[in-house]
Each structure stands twice: as C-alpha cells, then as structure tokens.
Image (spheres, rainbow, N blue to C red):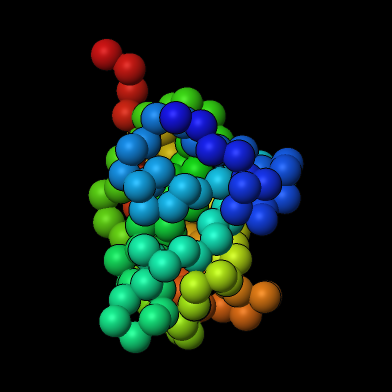
Amino acid sequence: MSFKPEDYDIPGHYKHWVGDKAEDYIGPFFFIMDGDTPRSAFRVQEHNCNAHDSVHGGVLMAFADYTLCLGANMGESESVATVSCNNEFVAPAYKGDLVEGECTIIRRGKSMVFTRCELSVDGKPILNSSAVIKRISPR
C-alpha cells in the first residue's frame, strides 16, 4: 500500500517507503534524500499517543530507526538491519505535530554503518538517536 504525503499535511516531494507493514501501521512515515542527508517526516495521529496525550516513546524510537536505516541504505533498496540503537528523549511531541528527522552518517564501512539522527518538532529537538546498522549482502 502506498500513502500520499499530502494526505498527512507533509510536503509532496516526500516519498513513502513501500513494503514495511509495521512502519505503515505506526505512521505512515515519509522521507526525502537531500544529497547525502536523509530527512524524514510523519504527522502525529491519535493512535501514536500514550495516556499523557504525547507521542509514545516506542513510536519515536521506531521513527528514529526508520531515519537511521535510511542513512545506512541511502534511500535505496539495499537491505539493512539495526544492530544497536541508543535514544535520548529530549522533549515531547503531541497529536497534530509534524515530527521531522535528519540523519548524519558517521562512518560507512563495507558491512556496518554508524549513524546519528535528531528528531524535531518546529525545529526544536525531541529525540537524539545513534545506531550501528548492518548492511545485508544479497545471497
């Protein structure tokens, strides 16, 4: 299933990554490649919120993982898997907020990629994340 960013008040030049049912169920999430910098976005909906009416931490971690993996595969179809992921929660996000992510590649090796990302709302950080991502070679 493919989602349209405009339906979530996200700029139309963003793309939907087709094929990940979990991300579609949680999000949907969207991305663009800005040169070598992956950027991501999702609009917070009621089903993303916890009992405090803020975005559930697990949703933010899933979105951070999505952003970090985009950095590892550079928005291409290369298969990758998260080896480790560390998260620091900085501030909450709420229903209706546009959460944006930006990924930085620290080091890209033959089999591992070290990445960082920041999630923000209105330019203010809400979560910092870093990960080690395994590049999976085709069999």
